[in-house]
Image 1 (spheres, rainbow over the protein chains, first blue to last red):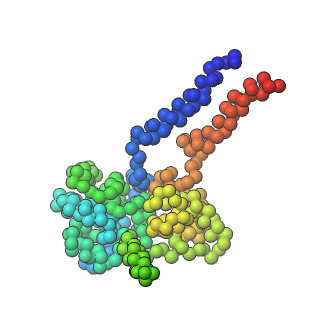
Image 2: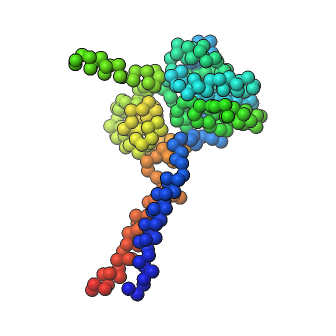
Image 3: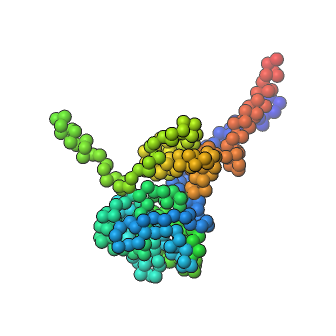
Length: 176
Length: 133
């Protein structure tokens, strides 16, 4: 063999693949599907009321110069129950919250609100998940920060916990 | 015994698992035009379900997959090109949603790697053949 360094190539390739495997094990996997709509305007939609006594939600309702939260929830979703007190805390802190109920029935939404309180200004009913798809939302619960001009500024995936409340207040205030 | 098993089977059905909205009409109903349906089906096999992440929306029973199939059929019926619909999905969920990586950036590397490995293999084997001859 007049070129002995060639012998090292297979070893280098195997070491590279082994390194990739170790890297894959060490780096925690992000299984959440993030919306690619951040920084873009809200898609146009108009949803009927999800339950009696609370108005429905259209995209135009959220473009009034005031930043707010848009909560994607459902009465059948357990983490949505867990985040209810923190949505209440956000409302108490002066944050306006609109909501979209996914695959829900009016009586179920009413029961959910009477049990966990209603922190929402408006609730639209997205029974076929069509608006959820337009928003790039992948499940319930999710919470978006919407700017006063209707720009989607931030997406929080999963239930809001105590530690997320100050962060969300800050993001809404920063959008003012 | 058989009746008891039947009762347990009925109880096990996850009736209340994922809410109670209607399934969009076009989620499970084919388009009347066979050519359009074929184009829609081809695209549906190459889009990833958001809810059950390993399956295509054509294979998945998840509600979100149904909504995505309905959206694909609706846009195909409206005369939209399949690649434009793929772009529509990518604009909402990122490149992740497509099973077919595009030929840009990391996607380009993915497409070219087999070719590069083949060229390297031929180059490595070249010396052996020459010595054999």
